[in-house]
Image 1 (spheres, rainbow, N blue to C red):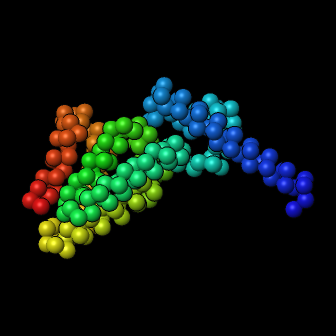
Image 2: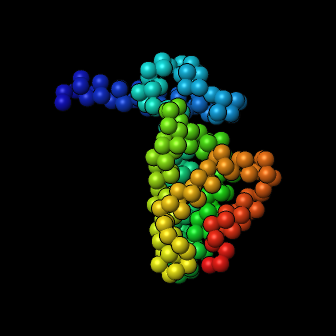
Image 3: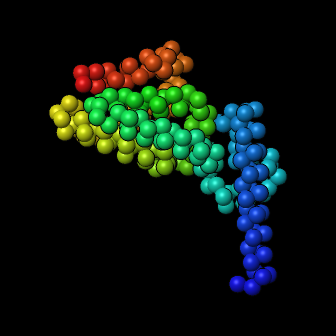
Length: 203
C-alpha cells in the first residue's frame, strides 16, 4: 500500500468513526427527549445531519443502534454475572440462578428504555429478531446451563431450553412493564412471582 492509499484509508476510518459518534449522540438526545419507542431512524439521521443511507449502512434497525449504545453496559452486566457465579460456585444452582435473575432485573430497571430498543426491531418478525440478539443468546445459554444443572440433581423438570425461553419472555420489556405498571408489582415482587411460577420455590 502506498502513502496515498494509506492516508485515504485512515481518512475513511476517521470519517466512519465520526459518523458513528454523531449518530449515537443524536440518538441519545432524541431518546432522552422523546423516548426510544417514539423515535424513528429517519429522525436520527436528520438529527445527526447524515443521509438515511449512511445510517442504514451502519445500523440495519433501531435495535442494532440501541445495542451499540448499550454495549458497555452489557459488558458490565455480564461481568457482574460472572463475578456472582464465581463467588457462589459452590452454592446450589438454584441460588446462582436467582442471583442472575436479580442482577438482570436491576439492569432492566436502570436501562429500561434502551433495553426496550434492543429488544424491538423494524423487521416484520419482532420475536425472531429479539431471540437472535446477542443479549438474548448469551443470557439464554447461561440460563440453560444453570437449569440443566438443576435438572441433573432432580430439582426441576426438563426441558431447560424451553424453560429458558419462557423465563426470558417473562423478563422481556413488554412483560416486565405490564406487570409493573398495570399489576403494580415491584421488582422484588416480580422476581418472587417468577420464582413461584417456574416452580423454583422448592429448591
